[in-house]
Structures are given as C-alpha cells and as structure tokens.
Length: 401
Image (tube, rainbow, N blue to C red; front, top):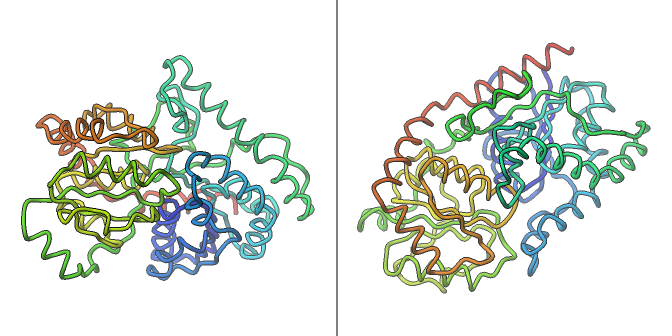
C-alpha cells in the first residue's frame, strides 16, 4: 500500500509523524512524508522518504517578537502557502491509497485526498474531536465544564473560517469545487497516551487514542563524553529546554530559570530559542539534540514549554514536569499535569518570574509530585502506540479501496 503523510509544524509536530511513517514502512508499506524543511532531519535519520513543503516555519517563529502573536503569524504562513502545499501534495500523492493529514496542513491534506479520490486519515498530537470531557486544547484558560463541547465546535468553526478562502482558492486551482463546511467524518488517530487523555466516552467510533508515537532511535544513541561526564559528576540534573519555541523575551526566561534553580545542576537545550549558553552559570551544561527516551530518565525533573512530545516523554520517564507554556496546546498539557497531581501551578511564559518558577520547582521536588510522576511513568510504559496506529491506518485505508 502506498501512503502519503502531510504535516506542517515544528519538529515536535513532524517527529511523531516520521515515527509513524517508519512504522508503516516496517509493516511493508510505501510512504512519503511532506513537512517543513527544517524538521525533516528525523525522517532522513529513519530512512523515511521526505519532501520539503514551501515555507519556513523556523524563520516565522524565531522572528523578533513573533511569540507575541504566534497564532496570527502561523496562520499567515499557512494561508500564503496553501496553494503550493496542495500542488505538492497532489503531485506526491499520485497513485497513493490514502493520505494521512496533520498539523497546519490538515485542510490542504483533506483537499488533496478529494482531488485524488482516496481516503483521508487524520493523525494528530492534540485531541481536537469535540467532547464534553475537556475543553478545546487551544484555549489559554479552562471554561466551566458546561461549555467544553461548545469550545471544540467553536474552535473548529473559527479555524475553518480562518483558512476557508485560502483552502478554496487552492482547491479551485486544482479544479475542485469549493468546500462549504468543515470536514468532520474522516477517522482521527491521536498519538497521545490514554494515561494523560483517556478516550472520552462521547467521541465517535472513528476517533482513537493510540498512545505516543516514539521514534526508535534511543537504543542507537551514543551520548557525547562531556554529557556522560556531567551526568556522572553529581546528582541527577534538572533538564531545561523549550523545544521549537522562540521569539519570546529571552532575558526574562533566562533570569527566571537561573533565579529559580540557583546553583543546582542543570542541562540546557537551547532548541530554536537562540539563547547563548555563555549567558548561563557554570552549573548549567549545554546539550544538543539528545533523545528524550535516553536523557530524561537520568534527570530529576524537566522544565519545558509543554509541547505534546516533551510532556509525554517526561511523564514516561517518571519525572515531574514544570511546564512554562507560551502558546497553543501547551496550556492544555499544563492542565493535564495539574489534574494528575504532578503540577500545582498555572504558569505563563509571557509573565514568568524567578519567584513563580521557584515555587513550581519546589512543588515538583516534593514527595506528592514525585509519586504522581512515577505513577504516570508506570502507566505509560506500554509502547504499542505505533502498532495500534499502523493497524488503524491499514483498516481505514483498505476499507475504502
């Protein structure tokens, strides 16, 4: 079976889809992955054929002050390139049996499936199917439970209104009729753990919580000597990393982290932040990309932005997280960990201070948070998320052939 995967987002968005593509190839299928150029290194490492979509998400995110209006900036990027993406998807997808759609490219992917007459399968890292169990993950606040379902419906409609014109212009260029309403009947596969997001009882039958989609790279990882020496030189350090987040107030963030941790040993991963390691005290050891499966179990806790992948990885390692959210679904994962007892504080990246962060770190150091984190780690040891997703892709693709 030939499958096309199309996604657009940061490394945290592309990495799980590359893992899914690799798992599908291991099951005997032909796969190609389309995504942002700066995020395709993981696909290349896994041997998944890939192609860069038009646009530059890293430049969009790291622009000075971009984080203050990140939603609008990413929307502009998507609108500007919807036509390019659809042309690329249709060209790459010729002869395919199904298209797996994700991220900012989801409406383009669904339109490509229409153009090619093949089924579309959603593959998301954030639970967006409407439910009364929790509110839309894209709200930066938690509404009364009564409004949970409505918040999902409202977010879906607003998203469609935002991208409708650009999507229909792209569809017209491919001879497709305009789409009048939001797609709602395609299957949805979620690469999230049921320990963090139990499957809601009111979801449709074609919405599935699979478990995390983890690239099989950790066992082949050879850690650098300086990292091993640092880990061996003292107690487990605090991991500090903010993934693909950038364009925020670096000075505020560095002051908060350094002020909260004092002389405590820490590992710092700059990611896309642009923070220079030279600005950090000697107790901080800079690290490049290190597989979370290898690194986080060797740490005492993780301070991070709350992306789906990092949140899952810290939980699976059985260590407490301190989430400093900036945008999007990061506030949702903050709330999930507060519900699980791992966190108590609702922090915000835009207003973080050393005092706020110090209190959150003190809670994460406590016995209750460590017990809750360990319990989550035990619950998340099942690594069958990819196997379940592969079976569901085969089921839905074969059913409509």
